Length: 128
Image (cartoon, rainbow, N blue to C red; front, side, top):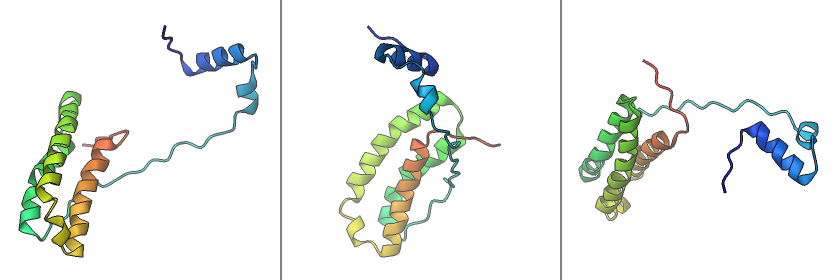
């Protein structure tokens, strides 16, 4: 059997089961408000190697679509598509990225990391 609890109900249940009623309230430490980090998801540097730049086209397109939509179903579909696009990019560039200049390698990594960060953000605030 599964039982779902609100936070306060779970604390009371666990304390009653353990015979430690009121312990949580007596020992609770004040917590800081969670930090808010605003990331700039629009910085997508160009890559000097034309072949690698072309290989990132689908990832860049997905990135633009994700930033442009607020529809939750479409966002979920884009997150699913990300895995396919990412897998293809890895396959297409596996032998190419080793010969990139340091600047291009950093740009390539930034492109991938920017999209990964965007899709894995816990909260997305849309401002218009």
